[in-house]
Length: 200
Image (spheres, rainbow, N blue to C red):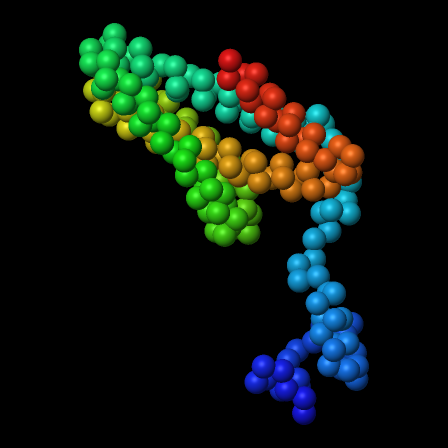
């Protein structure tokens, strides 16, 4: 029996469409030609992102822009004029709140590698917005809140909406893969245009 790198050819399982009677070189070529992952999405038509079913994703990016602008612009005046913090302390708190942006790749890996009930994107979008809502409710119900606690809540809210945002980014990348080569990327660019417009 022919062996390759210490393995007998008979011990190697071949794809169904590779002939076992072909030469070793031909079998290797045919095996490498078989795609490892069947991905039908590139052959499907891209969805209409302005339809009622998919427009929620663009609404999601509008909300991300609003929340990002609010969180980044409200902590500094709160620290200076309500909590009475020193200017250097308030500047540090604003930087502290934006730390989760440096870990976006970790959120993307989480949604890719840890599905929830078989779903990779939608549960993380719902969890992220749910946690953000809980943090906003806490800030609304507590009459007076210390600066360290406010900074921590703002930090956790940033983590929450970034968790949802990274899952939505991955979903849009999957949809963008269906676009024709001439217009590929228009879905993502439209989403980011909406996000930055509402961030202002």
